[in-house]
Length: 334
Image 1 (cartoon, rainbow, N blue to C red):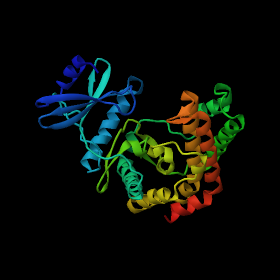
Image 2: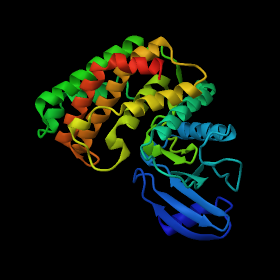
Image 3: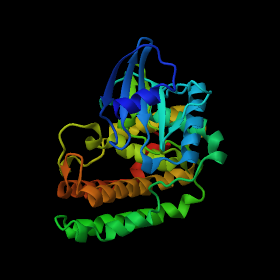
């Protein structure tokens, strides 16, 4: 954001004595962020990516954010505009929000943090359930025909990838989607965060101190989000550092159990049998969808080369399939 843009946008909030402006290089480059330091504290200004700006969705997101904030859930404090009680600024085709900056630590890979993330996820779903009627439609990872088509021709678009492993990825996604669809209609729905992973959480002494980025909130099956969270918190690549090899593709069972334990401790409504049965296929589907999208778009995943990542995914998928009953047992009694 230019100085002129910042000066114009920030004038819409009551900010006393701005002393510094610092770009924050985190997340998507299409949604620039600036730390605004004032005499009365630090704030984070965010400009939403145009491709993801939907007025109805963004308005719902802010309504939900304020509701969570009012309930004491650990989200950032949205600042009200000078002109009215709103929190979303629309100027010259762009949307902006300003929130109080929160200092916190990133996920360090401890089971206590994983358990706290599970508890907070259950609490999030319980609190957002009352907003289900007004939630705008969204798209999760389940039954993505567009991604299935991408996976089917992945070896043609990325010839460096092993053709047999590309076939395994496509077949695994197709079967997992079929298995999950058999129970989909009976799965409890709520408003989900839509991107619950370690990078969107901050941690403090007592666990999760802030849940970030509510841009992808939508109505969805709560077990689908829990399935993806289990993947994210048990995957070494999701916790940073050097890329592990395929021999590390076995999920971290302590992390899986910790997330599920946290969920069970906080959820008002425990998992029903249909959710427990759907959990392994949804984990498989989430894994395959994320892999197919990343390989199609970039040919790699974070610090991993495409062939290494695809091999990792195939090994992890094989483990989930062979340990489906163990995962279900953990979900029932973590």
